[in-house]
Image (cartoon, rainbow, N blue to C red; front, top):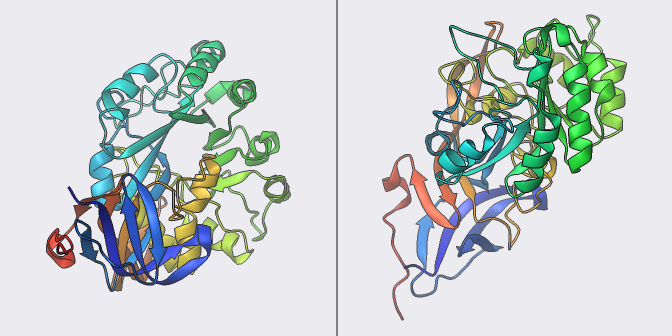
Length: 393
């Protein structure tokens, strides 16, 4: 067995260290061992040539649904990792306290890629989400289970990183904003952040963000009208600015109905970038309009966001949101995860949830993945050489 895995000659972009330079990266065990301009291989080391490619910390998708087989919206986390370079999928409320144990045993513990979770305050999580049936789990107040959610979150702190709730006309119906108030009590009781989904009103965008605390996450932050973060006059709503000033985090959560180019352009023109970029990948958007995480990232690159900021929004910023600084970084001692990317140039059509098409000239492509210190998957393995080890001395 190789002693270390060394990635040679890649452009390392690690926003956690403000690093953008051609470097070597070494992994030992399941951690990052070193990042340096040149790392000499020792006998037994596995060496991969990544010259001409971008090496980033393993991508974190802060909003996914990967309870495959347990809910109708779940996709396979390992396959998602292979195709999109996402080494950590954060499942956002697919499971609630009534079915989290099955999610843990049958999906999370069996997945090779990392899976963390926001626990839904609704007892069965998001249980009726498909092409043929759509029941807002937060509409039925009898389904909300704050005591059970506290107990399950408290006993699964190794995997549960926060509490999830969905509000809006589709998710909470006539219950309005009340499920959010209950979920905030749960989050406060267990000392965890909350992620809140918002769809069409009621409640309004302002009502939701006014309730969120520092470190809480509003997902679907660049929604189309109605319930957008900006005014019809092209300014950012006062409530949104106040929320950011007090430390509320704004997450993209693209999904099937929650990302608009028009909204994104307006917010970015006002200097309001998302804190985190996530796909909200599930069975109803994996074939479009979201497709995957690298496609979602590519949309922001083509909207004019700096590549370093795009990478930060899916690495260090996401690690901050989940309060795990060892995620989303290539600092020595951090998790031994990395994503090898390529920026393709050409003509690429991107679509948002309203049907607007953006013609972009760049596309971020995931080429290979290092997972837990091992060369785990490559789209075209021959590009990076055979799994050669350093010659014995």
